[in-house]
Image 1 (cartoon, helix red, strand yellow):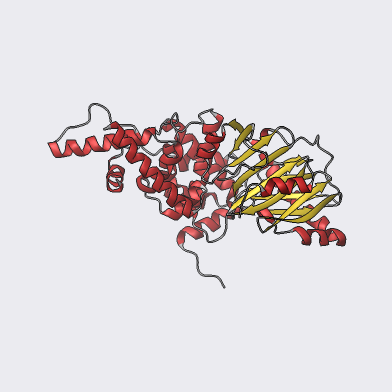
Image 2 (cartoon, each protein chain N blue to C red):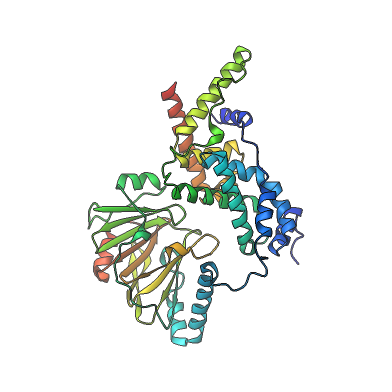
Length: 186
Length: 242
């Protein structure tokens, strides 16, 4: 006899069997992370919404092939990332530099200003956002998934279709390049 | 830097998450029930089915089964299935859109996370292609219509499946001290499988050239060529892989 399933795995099992209500519950639990992941790769929030929607539909169709007991979130993230990349390719946005992530745009000029220390922190954050925006898609995506969306190393690996070791090495190189960009821009 | 990024995480003004679950549920409601999905002739269904049929054909023919056992689980993490009725002969060209877009060698090297090796025997490639159809990317060095050397990150993720007819011979060889296999004779069908084992339809094609498959250092190599075994081995060995 196998181990009992946790509540999410039960939902996955029901969804695998064609239960759309169970799938809707699963979607609700993961729609924010799916949408934000799409935001990392898409030029506008509307594009990110389309990508996340299509990814959920594809995930539904692929559920019968989902490995029982495997974590659902990274599997879903991988579908979101693949969908976003396919769409970017189809749109001819091969360069990650052109596909700027909407969520990483600096805040508007009307951002509230506070005490000096807070302003410095905001300036540092704005510089970081600018630096992230000029990285390649590959560098930006690994940094964003790992630190901005707080995915674990294993989840990042699954989402990007890389090995864990590759995530480590590419993350390290991406952070170096981020530092370089910030040094240059300073 | 990492602390700064984590601080940034708390500051980012993400766009409001739309009601995806509601929108998708409405889309799914408009679709036929998945469990009732009929055996429509969708490639996603037909291709695995084809694989099953091929395997069935293999099991039914003892000499074919023997041949499969001879070549299964070999280089480049590719699975090879021998079938009685191979597809019709293709033009035999080793070039095609499946190889990806044309890039410079430097660009290809920058785009993948593995070292792209150039066979010393052939020298710098006149043409380089970069494909994203396999996870991690695949780089192909093209030397006219005679050689196409594809290099990709091997491992659990990219698989390929070949259906090899009785007219195709599989010859054991060695490159860099590792087992390699040379396929020659009748054309065979090739399709890459994704990490879930699903055939990637866009990669399905017929191969008419000879192929040398081997892997080394976590990388898979596929040399398609109109040259024979000896020349293919010489080219492969000049990559100096261990």
